[in-house]
Amino acid sequence: MSDGASAGIDQRERGFLRLEWAREHMPVMAKVRESFQRERPFRGGMKVAMALHVEAKTGILALLFREGGVRTSG
View 1 (cartoon, helix red, strand yellow):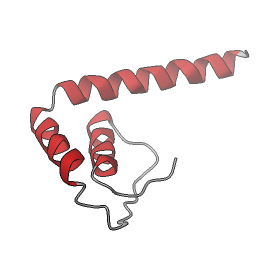
View 2 (view 1 turned 90 degrees about the horizontal axis):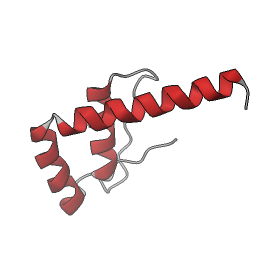
View 3 (view 1 turned 45 degrees about the vertical axis):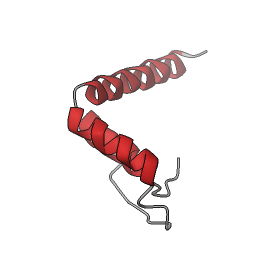
């Protein structure tokens, strides 16, 4: 594996760790997440667009939308 590839894995892992940290420290989002997983309020095919670079809190919001039924790519 080249240095660039291993650096990419390190960045990806850091990103996942940041998402995990944010999820653990956002109790209101945890309650909304539970509700979305049960009810899937966006299952009608809603799409959400967002910027390529987001911070962990916005990433948690995007994952929450996906769990609520929003279609995503990637």
